[in-house]
Amino acid sequence: MNSQTTHRASLIVRDGTSISYAMTGASRHRRVALIHSLALDGEFWRPVADILSKDAAVLTIDCRGHGASGTPPGPYSVEQFADDLADVLDGIGWPTAAIAGASMGGCVAISFAAQYPSRTTGLGLFDTTAWYGANAPKQWEQRAERGVADGMASLVEFQKTRWFGDAFRAEHADVVERTIATFVKTDPKAYAETCRMMGAFDLRAKLGALRMPTRVAVGEQDQATPIAMARAIHEGIPGATLNVIPGGRHLTPLECPLRIADEIQMLLEKVNA
Image 1 (tube, rainbow, N blue to C red):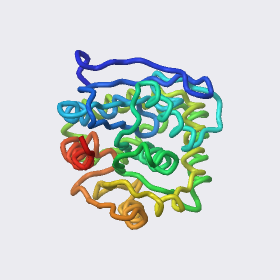
Image 2 (cartoon, rainbow, N blue to C red):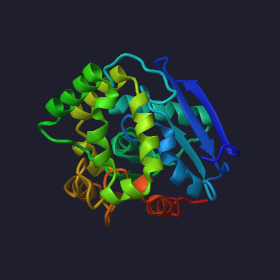
Image 3 (cartoon, one colour):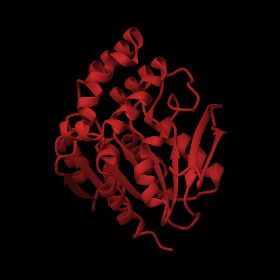
């Protein structure tokens, strides 16, 4: 986000954890809060936020255990991450906003919409899922243990081929390297607790009660949250739309920010001025 127009700050949420956030764009009725992917931070959304901030106020946060936010001991939960966002919204004086998230951020966005439906004017869910499946606790525990035992750098080769397609990695090495740099700085213990959170949550039963405008998008080549997971969200939320992004992999807000910004702008168009 443009440093000349971005306000960065932090606040203490209900359990005493410091949550770092950034705001950019004009304070208008068009407001959107963006939640990042696992082991990244609010800067993940910079390409999209730069586009959206021309017409809307944009909030990005560093989830607990990530970026400049506090790293309290676990366990963590998606409900707790959603409460953190609610507390930040209270702190900046936003009664409502469109909520959008990618990957882990999408899981948190679903939880926020379920917990705070009257505060959610629209929901953008990108490269995400409502449930990782019956084997998820074991699979995520393995990643958690590896991050602690071998360090975050040990996971980079696995991650970057899931994050980005082959052509994107070759053509946008700067984006790949920035993403890796953020990933390896993540506190391993906080990463492990977040991995356990990802293995444990199941929001499928919450989908049917969501009534806000919802747009779901997923990369055609997404291996982490495949099209079937996006389709399950689409089918579960009444009136949701689903778009499959040709050639996209798992971090479409970085791979194709214009496309994701368009999805969010279509949500914002539905908000009454």
